[in-house]
Amino acid sequence: MHASLERYYSLLSTPDDSNLTLCVCHVPQGHFSPLLANAEIGFRLKLTGPHGYFTFKSSTRKPVFIATGTGIAPFVSLARSGVTDFTLIHQAISADELYYQSYFHKVTPKYYSCLPAAPSTAPSSPNLFGSDISECIRKNLRPGSYDFYLSGEREMIRQVTHLVDEAYPESHVYTEVFF
Image (cartoon, rainbow, N blue to C red; front, side, top):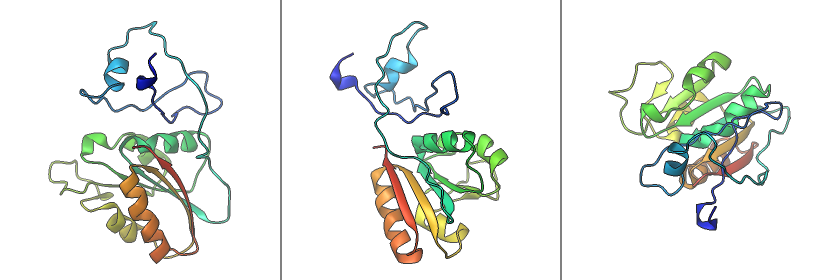
C-alpha cells in the first residue's frame, strides 16, 4: 500500500471482539474509501496501531459524547464495551449520515441528533433538532460538570470546546479529530 493511501480510523469493535469493524463513509471522489468500497473478499490491508489515546476515563462526572459524521465510531465501541449512563449528541449533514442511531436509541434515552439544515425531509423524532451543535447541547444538557468526549471534525471540536469553557466551566474535554 502506498503511503499516500494511509488513513486513520477508529474501531467500532471492542477489545473482546474477534473481528475488526470500521465505520467508513464512502466518498466517491475520495482516495481510500472507494478502494474499500470496491474491495473483494481476500483483499489485503496493512494495519498498524493502535495510535490514539481517545479512551474512556471513569470519573464522578457524567460522560457526554459529541460526534460529527463518522466521528460516532469510538462511541459505538465505548457503548458496546459497557459504558453506560451517557448523553450522546450526533450532528450530521443529512439524516442518512446519522450512523448507528437505531443502536443508540436502544442503549441510551439521552441520544440527540442534530442537522444544521431544517430536518423537513428527515424522519420525525422528538430527539432530532434542526440546529447547530452548540444550540443542541444547550437545549439538552443542563448546567453542570461533565466529561465531554468530542469526536469528529475540527470546527465542531473548536466550537464545542469554547461552549464548554463558557457554559460548563468545571468540565473536562477529551478530543479525537477526524478531519
